[in-house]
Length: 206
Image 1 (tube, helix red, strand yellow):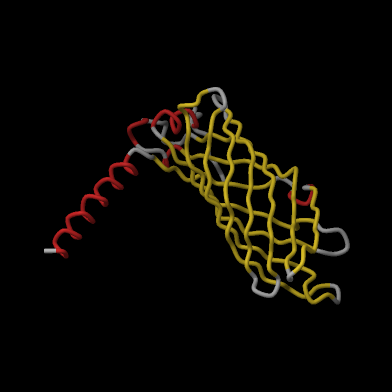
Image 2 (spheres, rainbow, N blue to C red):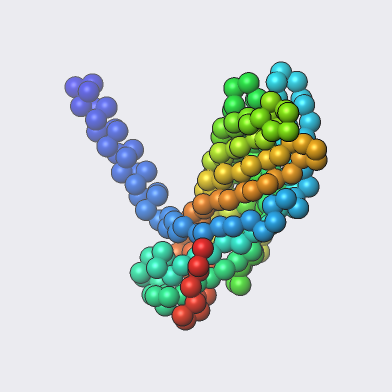
């Protein structure tokens, strides 16, 4: 009897979860950073083998292709919407374990809406010898999960998922040599609909 009750309760919870998730529409957006080496990087050793890296002033561009938008929005088949974003990063890296924890925040500006986002970061870091230093380069693989919000419309909220790969040079003046991200943006039909004012015949090309 106990196992049967657990099965029924588990089934109910799964159904509730499915209903909650069913209202969220996720769309992939191609992403590129514009001159990531221009971001301001501050690195500090904070003890116990940990390195704190703060980066401000990162900027880039997301591209949303019409073919990736659910068909109920009926976008032009070849349409593409581009919108800019900015980002700040704070990472704490345990150099001996190669573990990264951190947080990020920024803003996404589309034609119709401006969304603020913030999220928590988990990831891995690998030290690479460079310029006679055992760890002259850091290669980071980051997974970010966070939320989107519209300050002008409290009902408009969403989710952001980022997978980021980066190369950080520590010497002589710390800077990002490269950054790239794959992203997914989620929300209800109203939020996703506000992201795409597609243009006929335009290709995302990323």
